[in-house]
Image 1: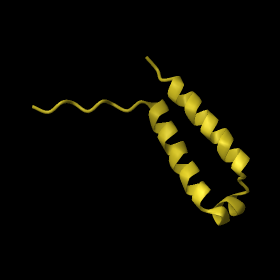
Image 2: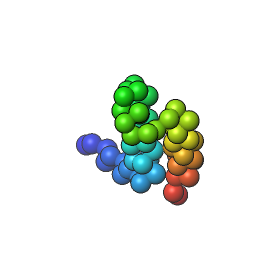
Image 3: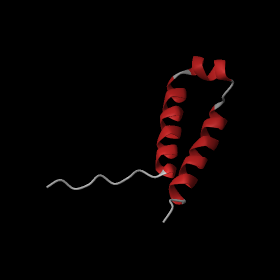
Length: 58
């Protein structure tokens, strides 16, 4: 018997997508420049991601 997979909640998925975007933009200065995103913006996104993970619904 297999264990059922835990259903992902919206906060976890959103935090994961933010993390992927942050990683992509950290690696590509050209993409950051084209989208007018600074490293300070990425730090702010990281804070939002952490807040989302702390606010997991019960």
